[in-house]
Length: 186
Image (cartoon, rainbow, N blue to C red):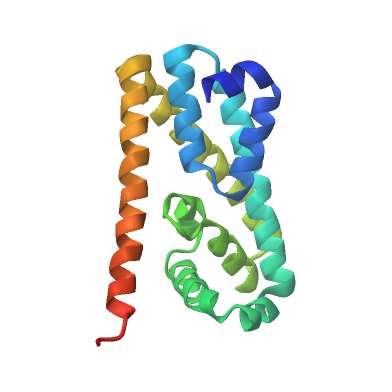
């Protein structure tokens, strides 16, 4: 990723923006850790790019949920339980939920759509979402930056490589055991 940043220069921040538009935690952590370890990433530009990307991504999902929510849920019934979970959290925690949902793994985009489906005021969501996206961007860039500074370039490479292997192994094993459970007994 350090080579990517050196080759692409400021366009790499556009990639960070796009990645944050859809999700982005892992990308932001790795980019900022590499920035601290190698000096090729400006943390302030990274914060700004992922802040705006995250904000606009959630605004998009909110608008889609507001406009097409019920019809989309009919087409994708598997999303219905996640939207119901998010709606319950929104009802229970309100503003706090909007400020924190992006820190809950796997529900960020669904949560934005759920806020739209629930009929939350557009201006209120936009203001809360803007603040929450800034908090999220600063938190993840800072966490990655401190991790990169703490580990240094060589140890960071080993940690990232080990983490990638562990994640791949986890998904392979999970898939293997799910298939074994589903396989009919002979």
